[in-house]
Length: 304
Image (cartoon, rainbow, N blue to C red):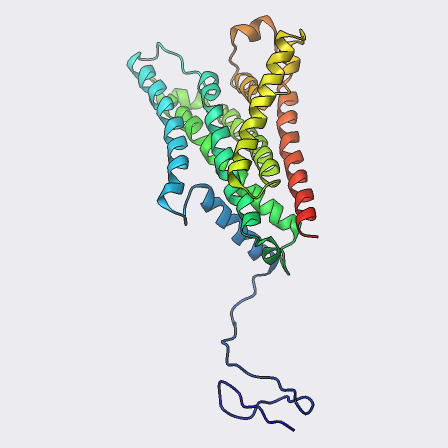
């Protein structure tokens, strides 16, 4: 019978099986810490994804776009507040036009950052490694989607919250303005949440179909542009009502919903009143749910 020495102790290895077989104790350090289980794995995936959305833990170049989008959304809000303060209450603060101008920036943020979370894992072929033991396809998809939505929520909420707080601050009587605007925080939260859910679902679904980040970014931007072109074509060529065709275009849906939530109107809305706000909210929620479903189905194909 062959005697095999342990690499760590130099003593005969224990547990020899058969004449030529031995179990070697190579002296690797064992893990004696706490086992955090499935919930801990989910939190780790979520937190890593959330930080990656803003470029933390990556190169300085990865932080440029998130910082640009955040500044580009906050500066117009500051400009509106400065103009309202200079007019001493004579200039009304409107949320709808501000949101309308920022939706393209929100879409750009998702198009650039969603592939960093989802396409990158496919590109480096680490999905089979991640989807082992505690991490299932469902938990992976939910963690990644939650990171996308929460990061977009912060980006969408920041200018609205600044405008909300600033409107109280520039008022002639801030305490009276606060009492009057107490319930106005709910449209702020609803708008940021629904925009984030819709764009997060679209970004997750499209980014999951390619391992190339450039292709994923192009597909997200291209899909939104195609949806806009189709909706515009139905308006101009097919004679479909603008209130019907806008549900094909997520950007127009978000824009109209913003005006409804903040009880503001455009000239076209006065001539052709929009549908109930619940219909717009349902469309945006459906986009988020559909995106989560597509991401999960794609994972089933990638990792049987």
